[in-house]
Image 1 (cartoon, helix red, strand yellow):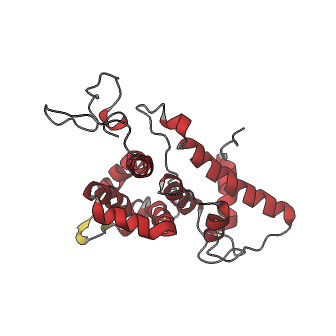
Image 2 (image 1 turned 90 degrees about the vertical axis):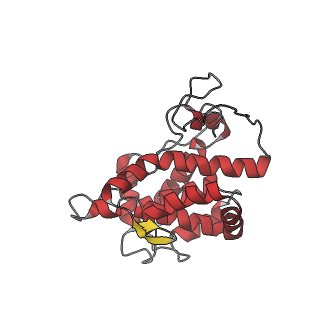
Length: 233
């Protein structure tokens, strides 16, 4: 039986603890945690809890008030990880449609920081990058050998840096940042399908002789799905 996703209140409670003085300074907030877990889930290999959980707290155990609080916090972390795993599971992938498999958790600092829009999604992308470092050699090899995959990852990590990873002159403005966040669910799915193909091989290929089909155009196969969610995956 799958675990219920965390409610907004539970996510807030988890974030409050993660950002409290009782955790190491480098502890992830829930947005960074989300990006981190998405990278692990869609990446090249399965990463067990005993490897990823300590990284949430930068390798240093937090100070829990008692066993009950420990159970609640660790339980919330496990539930969120399970929610992400379920979103990208085989049963969900077999029913892809116009809606993305998962919407990344992007926090808004509106009312706290007047320039919050200039860094929207930065912590999520930072978490995603940390997830890549869990198996850095495999990610780096893929980036070196596949230009399309490199472009996808660059699009994600631009949210963290505020500019293209290899060209600081390509600065991202607020409008471009908001557009990139809207594209983020599909970018993540591109990553997932890349690693699935790398791990298990391509199940089916389509030879196209006509004009190039846009990723948001209807798939030529007649399924009614967008190309990027069908044979363009």
